[in-house]
Image 1 (cartoon, helix red, strand yellow):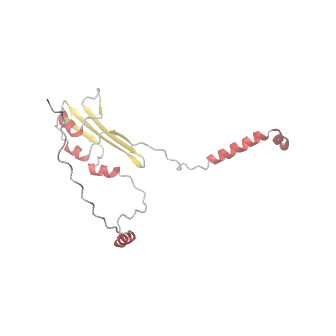
Image 2 (tube, helix red, strand yellow):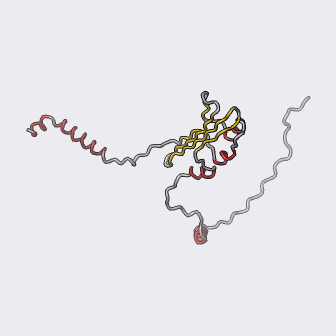
Image 3 (cartoon, helix red, strand yellow):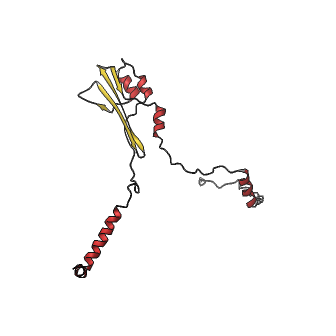
Length: 179
């Protein structure tokens, strides 16, 4: 019976065989083979530990704005609360999120709430991606390398160039003579 089916529909069997081989090939591709580009996403204003330490209860809103910058979130419903949120997502590095909230009573700073904030140098150190270790190229030539280079290159004596003829010191007038 199978011989009669194969003889009746040879192209259908061939298509089925090609499809099953193609689907079997899809299972052998590793997920790490293709890595799409993931853009760097930076949102908010970074507030460092030094900026946080500069804040003191009793400061007015203008002083706080001078130290921290414009708040990322200032709500109409919470006019006395400013939120500073910062997040950075980069390919190959874990996401970093920092939050600082300042609460005012009237125009005066009353309360400060924040995550553990890094200093500016600590944050800059976190931005560096771990590099793949490989053999670094030799960037400095040894004395033997320099001697080999000068031995292979014949030194040509540069012939003195003939002195150029002096340029004329008399030039024609730029404007026509007036009569």
